Image (cartoon, rainbow, N blue to C red; front, side):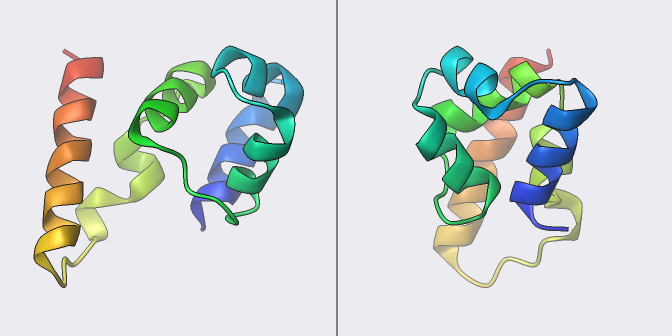
Length: 90
């Protein structure tokens, strides 16, 4: 399942609108909609906010256990996500 679909499912399970989530991040609804449609990637800070708002784990969202890293850039990104995850869920 793509990240956008996971976000949409989590948002709908909490009975929140895109506008409500976007206002809490904060960002405009149009930008948030692009994230749910996998047209735009969130920044790390936006990702952190989204996970907190929707009560989901970045690990679940990014499927970090199942990712095979093909480049140093991918590995650095995963390490940043791991660091973020640890800071959120001490």
